[in-house]
Image (cartoon, rainbow, N blue to C red; front, side, top):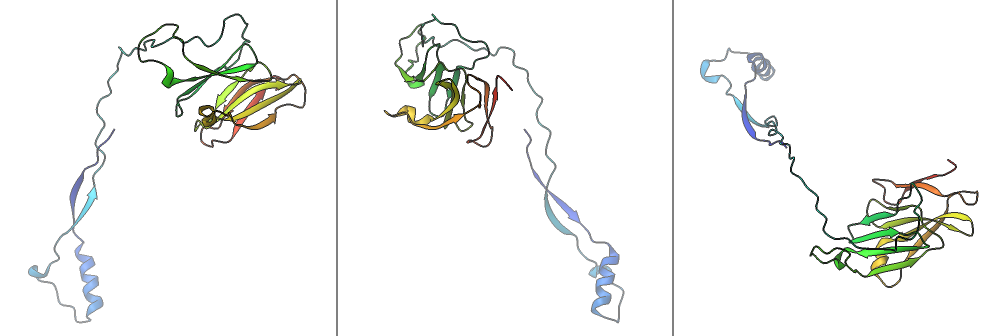
Length: 205
């Protein structure tokens, strides 16, 4: 970081400037006396930014496990390249895809501050038409995209994230992602600035 300070700068106009100015006022120009010489004018300018302090490397930074929360039974096989864990921290929600046709929703306020392993936390279960492969949350944490298959046709369902805090979950859009059947998404990327725009990559390119 840098700090800005102010300093006073003295500016003195050259003698030729004042001579030209006097000639315009009167054709009978008389040389200026010492007492009539122009005085300096003060302007206040921002000084250059001061250098930032020397950086300091921190080597003892640690991440410690706070809780372990089971979200589904480990009796299924997760496909490679899936993205099944996303968070909308603005709303205090974590979304987890499972190996079955469902979505689990964890509310962070339900986790106790104590360090508890395998803590039983209430989870919300949202039914899906198929096993999800990709989850993605928009840059403003307001929209959730889920890759699913409906009757052999690939879709992306877009949900309202705040609606997961209400009794009725709001599904806003059902977007078909490929004219071919059975083609799944391999990545969903929301625009980092425009909250309602995302790009999609599919298995067939």
